[in-house]
Amino acid sequence: MKGDVFPSEHSTRRDASTGALVHQLTNHASISHATYFLQSSFTADGRSLIFVSYRSEGAQLFEIAPFPGGEIRQLTGGPAIHPFSPAIHPSSESIFFVRGGSVWSIDRRTLEERLIIEFPGVQLGECSLGAGGEWIIAAFRRGAQSGIAAGRANGREWRKIPFPRTVIHPQFHPFEPEWIEFSGDPAPRMHRVRRDGTGLECLYEHGNDEFIVHETFLGATGDLVFTVWPHALCRMDWTTRERRTIAEFNAWHITPNRAGTAVLCDTNHPDEGIWITDVAAGRRRQVCLSESSNRGTQWKTSRYALAEDFQAAQSAAKSEALSWMEVATDSVYGPQWTHPHPSFSPDEERVAFASDRSGQTQVYVAEVTP
Image 1 (spheres, one colour):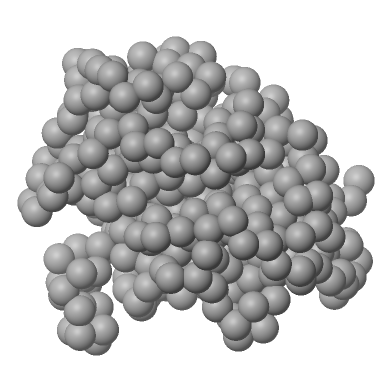
Image 2 (cartoon, one colour; image 1 turned 90 degrees about the vertical axis):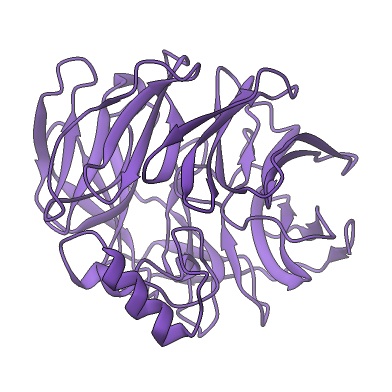
């Protein structure tokens, strides 16, 4: 239940490929995973790690403090949260997350929850914060309607910005918080819009056979970095739209460092582990192996999923609920908890990731060696 405390599940091993020290932080029969690759799992001081586990009723938030061998405390209870929605406020005093069509925050100290906004009949996706945590955005879906929900963390000035296709991974520009970059699915992928709903434009026109995924902002550069799956890690100038290749390899989920000088990523088909790539030189070095199952039929191809792909997955899973938000069953892009989704610690000396190498997804942290 909410507030319950459990003994540490911490253990360590040396990575078989690099020799890096790898902490296994959870060891429970249920699924446990770190937060999404666009968010750090660590609090700002690096002393606590936030993760999601199904060891309670549905997906709930948990905290390990102090890292790595501290006790495990359950932060949320009751109705399940969206398992990939949590975003830690820059102060680390609170965490934002989604339940169904509502956005909530929880005080890490008191565990008091606060409803920020609710959209009846809507399913929201992962949260993203802007302007020091003052603004929040999340993708939404209601029937055939999709778009972005955006508003202040105090519950004011919320609006829905419609978009004719599925929306994925909306993010605020790090220095121009009136701008939101987001993904449309399927192609063309990269778009931007102001948080007041004006200025909608496609950043790059391309077809379904150019499989652009997992774009995000390249740290302090303000540019975009993205993967052309499974061929290359690329960069786009936010102002000129100039594109260039950083390195040619099967980079998958990507997380830049704060300076924008390096990009962390996992790999798939084949899974060669977790890597850090130097943006200027294109050189990469391996952090550790992930040994996760990396499921999702679409990752075996080099194009976006179309209606027939989803229909085939729905038929195989005997489910009508499959979508980009579906995480509990096999689908064209998941289940997401079988993907490593690596992210940096605040000091960028550790990497949190998920792996089902043991048969069940657990939370791991690898020490980054020089």
